[in-house]
Length: 105
View 1: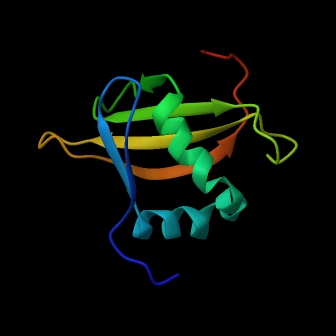
View 2: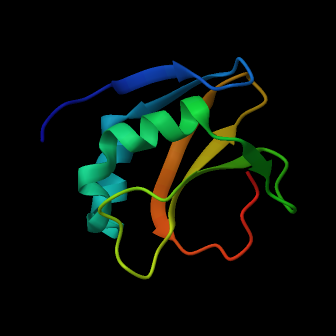
């Protein structure tokens, strides 16, 4: 894929504008190729999911989307990591599949 710039920009459920660049999507696929079929689900996770703040980095937030069809059998969610910068910029840095024992939704 040779696309550049933003793949999408959406508002999360808290009214924050968050974007994903094509460069970041390629990074995600390089390290987490199992995420390829979940491009739309990453966007929907940012739009619809609740978020939690990283305990050590107040500028890092995690959006979790549960129980999607097609996840690896040992996973029950996708996680989207968003960085909030002081200049009001908010963007996806990575996304991956995970198993989280305690559901926080």
